[in-house]
Length: 572
Image (spheres, rainbow, N blue to C red):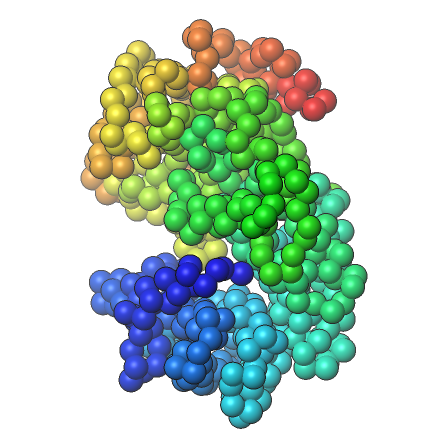
């Protein structure tokens, strides 16, 4: 719960976008998935979920005028829900007032969860501010949202929506007196808890945008539910979520260390920073170091994890992020931190724009962060049909990139290209952002190697294997408003056809170090007609990756791209 001043500031910022005739907010278009509306034709749109959140805030702040406006908004929002059980979109909302569900590219079933969580909390805590007829409509809307959530029945691997749907159905069932709905929510949360404990972490791992949402939903269950078992489960999961955030926070740069399963920004966005700042506030009258009694009103980081947000101690850990018996493969996440830098990587992952498979942060001086993000780009956009495979030992990463024949361009579901497409440019990039745009970054190029100095820290990267039917990689550096790009160009020039199915070989292997005093380690390469293995001796033991030379289907790459983690790291 935000304090009154913060809540009022949020309301006043949204007041400017409120259209009293339409009774919705007209906001900049930011959606890129599901909607068929194009930014050039619709730079602004009446976004329904933004309006629902605004109504929620108005009711939280209180007052007759704000309650009246909230009621006006809710009347419009509820009317946009599909309440016909015979339709495939039953129980959900479109994104925009201008675009009915039938006109969307693909309706987003998550809207039942997102709207549902706000409406159920309005119904539970602010019904007395609304007319009886509107309360009845709210109850009906919550019921329909619960039905949509139950019909869809997402699995526990979908962390954020698994929790959110549990909140809506659990609280909705309690409020509506619908035991079947309530018990579904309780079971769903328990299933998610058991699934998460079996892995040891969230499968939607270390997400700066979605972990705070997961915490908000879990706190909602903890604070609002009358089901004792669900409250206990939420409490246990909140502890796990906060530990995940705290051990990844890098105090020297104020960064949320990688790797990230999903994120919308490599640097923390203002709302994510605000979430952490609010959660780390000490309660009035409480001294630092005192154990904090749990409250049901405020989201607070547990006292036992707070020291991690200021400690500069060295941290180094790896952990599994999947149930291997379910997927047929495991994906490990490794993070290293010291007083100047952090470096994190997965052992596998597609290179789509919401994922950070290899990510570093460096203090370039005075606490100013430079981020280092690995990308695979098609015409300047992150490319889903490239697959990352890597193994990390402290400040060193050995990684490969190869290609999938059945995946997408910019999205793995909404933009399927199946390995055949037209493009003018393919390249592998290390993008240095943040303060990179404002500081000198002396860079040298020797053969297939870049070396860049970031403050007192040196980044080194080298293409140690370049086996591709597209020819030899070309190295380029480019300065832009974003920062510095260190590029390995696969192909560039006139737009042409690409067909991954026709390739005999397409593998690139790199060695990277961050903050090491000496040169890159020597990499041993072993290969035959079909496979290639790269290995390196580290202080923690032998690290190795094995990948096929030819492109494969995505699932085959996940299962057949192999890593050998250093023995010392496995023992941690």
